[in-house]
Image 1 (cartoon, rainbow, N blue to C red):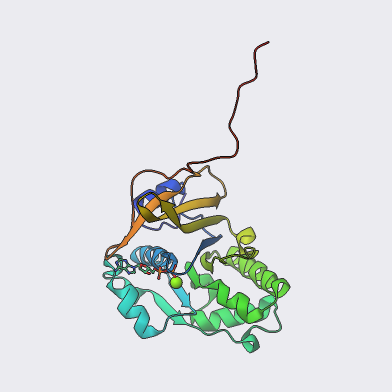
Image 2: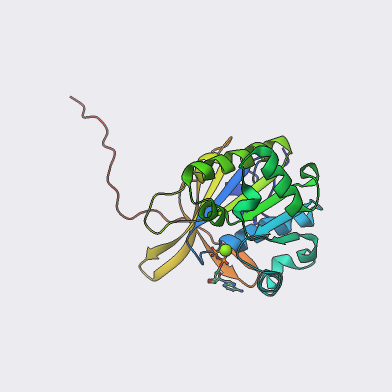
Length: 240
Ligand SMILES: Nc1ncnc2c1ncn2[C@@H]1O[C@H](COP(=O)(O)OP(=O)(O)O)[C@@H](O)[C@H]1O
Ligand SMILES: [Mg+2]
């Protein structure tokens, strides 16, 4: 099977090879945790394999993007092969929220037909959620986008800002793989760690694994983090 890999050995291995083709996938985490860097790895890996990669950014501009993501080691030789698109959502461009309208809007952003696109990154879908400002509309947009990905053989990676307190948005329900990035409180202070919350079609580790962000990009470190305390403990049945 041909997977859409991140090009990060351990992560691809934990995912059972990489992300499944023609699927919707999600990276979720709070601001500054490493979502954009991780998505950029995935974009770079696609470009390295001569895939057509579109990175839709709703937060960066051209200059920030080049001076930030362009400097990472993993972007060497591939930065200019990625189709960077800097977008500000406008309800005008999204309404009425139909499949035809979204397809037309997306192809305008892509600058080409959907069938020619291999990987799409949407960084972030939280901005889309805020623009639509309505959970029913947002869910509808997400399900249309998911349908379009299947229909046109696009592998999509969406990025979502994790809420500090409120409920998570419905996005994770549409995704076939969900990666959760978080800052864990450990005896030495804090550590970055990620965890596969969901991955269809194969088993995967459940624990948090640590990673670092360096000039080379994301480096997965050895080992796992398991919770020190737990609520339930298994006791074998008493022999009597
Ligand atoms: N070259 C670098 N070396 C080490 N850490 C970096 C480097 N560039 C960014 N970082 C770390 O990555 C964080 C931002 O990661 P990013 O993927 O942009 O976060 P977000 O989850 O908000 O998209 C920064 O706050 C910083 O801690
Ligand atoms: Mg980001």
